[in-house]
Image (cartoon, rainbow, N blue to C red; front, side, top):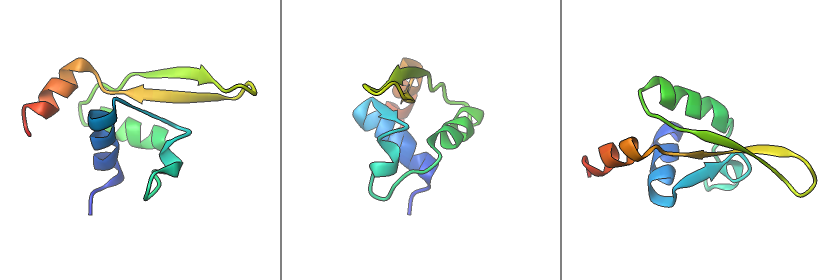
Length: 77
């Protein structure tokens, strides 16, 4: 079974982005996405995040994988 960190990286590679709103809805869910992203960054990946607002004024973060890391991952597949 893949770790949550691996699942986050795969999701970013396949879909381009992952938000803190969408992560808990995945099957199985990814909880505490910011913590998973922090661990992945410590492993050497560049994962930018941008803050967005919901229609009701709440805030959430959308994470993407940098172009350099996309090339790095694609080179290993």
